[in-house]
Image 1 (cartoon, rainbow, N blue to C red):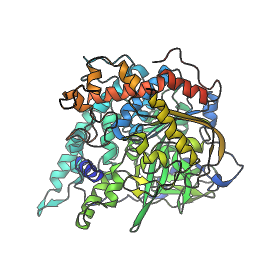
Image 2 (image 1 turned 90 degrees about the horizontal axis):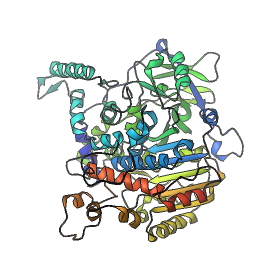
Image 3 (image 1 turned 90 degrees about the vertical axis):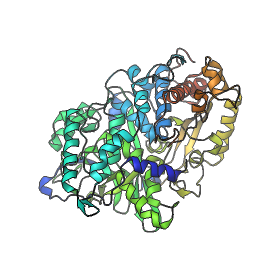
Image 4 (image 1 turned 180 degrees about the vertical axis):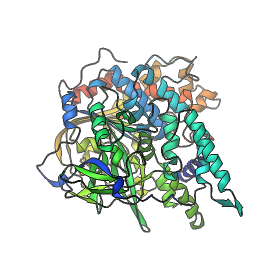
Length: 596
C-alpha cells in the first residue's frame, strides 16, 4: 500500500468530513495560573562548557539509575508489538530496572507510554517469554498490551467522532440540531462507560481520542482524560501551582525508566517544504530544545503546553503565568501518543502525490491530527503563544528515538530498530551517519548526522556477520564520538557505547520454533501456503499501515505474538547478551542468570 493510499485510509477512519479547524478560544490573563519552565541555551550544542543537567537529572540520580538509555523506534503496531517483546526481554535479563532513560517514537510510544504508566504487574502487561504454542498463538495475545494492539481497529472508535465534523447544513437542510443531539448522546454514553475524552469537539484532538481509547483506557486509568506527571512529588507541585487536585494527575509507576517521547512540530513554509522541529514529551516537561524564530528554546510542565496565553510571573525566574487553566484545555497522555504516532499527517499536508484539484480535500483531513500552541521563553522573557501548529509523528525527524539520549549525553545506549524493511534498505538508520537528500511525506532525512560516516559501514558489516552466524541482527560500537547537532541542540561528547538491534528473523530463532509454527515461517511449499503462512508472508517487515486488508493499523494475534517473541529473543539470546555486555562500561548491566 502506498503512503498516499494509507493516508487516505486513515483520514476516512478519522471521519475527515472536516472543513475547518475549530478556532482557538481567547482568554484573558485573569484566568492564568503559574507553570514552571526551563529555558535552554540555543548555543548549548556549540559550547564546551555549561550545565548539561536537565530537570530530571537529580531525581534519577536519587533513584540510582545507571547511565543506560534504550530507544524504541517508530513503525505503528509493528513497532508496538516488537517493543512489547523487547521490554519483556529487558526485564527478563535483569536490565530494565537499571535503565535510566527510555525513548520512544510513533508506534514505539504506543507501547512505551502504557508501560511507563500501567500501575499493575509487568508480567500481566507484557506477557511472558514462554515458548510459542500453536494452540493459542492465533487467538490469545500474550499480555494486556498485546491485546490492545490486536484490538487497534480505528473504525469502531472513529465513528464516534463523526458528529464533531458535521457542518450546520447539508444540501440546504439544517442539521445543526441533529448534530447537537448526536453530540449530547455521545457525551452521555461516554460518561456512562467512564470513557470521556478531553475537549470532545475539538477536531485536532480526534486522533488523540481514537488512540487514547485503544491504548490507554484499559491500561492507564484516566490516561485519556487526566493530566500527567512523573511522581507524587512533582504531581503535588503541579497541583499547587495549577489549582487542580492532586487526584487529577496520573503518575508513572514506581521504578520505571524516565520516558521521553519524540514528536515533530510541522511549521508551514509557504510552498516550500515545511520546517520540521523536534519536540520532546516527558512526564516532567514538554518542549523544544532549540530556538526556531519565536518557537522553542524552553521546556514547560506537560499540562502547561498548548496554552493560549503566556506572561511573566512576578518575582520568579522559574515560573510563568499561562492560561487558560488545565481544566479548560487539558493536555493528556493521549495527546502524546497521538502526536508521536501521527505518521499520515505530513503526507496529507503536502498532498504531493495527488493531482492539484484533490489537494485541498486531502489537506483538510490533516485537521483530525494533533495541533497545539507552542510556548517559548527567550532570555527570560515569554514570547507570545503560537497559534495551533501541527504536531506530528516523531519519525518525521528522529524515527529511531536516538537524539534525546544524545542530548543527555548517555554513554550506554541500546537502539531497537523495528523497521518495515531489511537493514540494508533502511534510510532512517543511514541518516544518522550521513545526510540524505530526502524530504518527503515520511520526513526530513537531511539533519540527523551525529556519527562518523565511516561507522555506517561498520554497522552494516556487523549486521552481516551476526546474521551469517544464524543469530539476530545486532552490532555494537565502543567509545564512539557524538558530533554536535544544532537542530537538536546536541553537544559533542565521546565515550558512547551503542548497540543497534534490528528486527531480523535469525536462523537460530527459527530453529527453536515448534511445529507447525516452524512450517508457517518457512513453508515447505511456497506455492501452497496455509492461512497462517500467508499472515506471516511479510514477517517481520509488516507495513505500518494496511498490512491486513481493510485494517488500518490492526495486526492479528499470530502476527503480534510472533513479532514480540522474535524481538524478545533478539536481545536475550546468548550472542546478543555477550555483545551488549562487551560493549558497555563494566558493571553497568548485570549478566542475566540465563539466556534464550
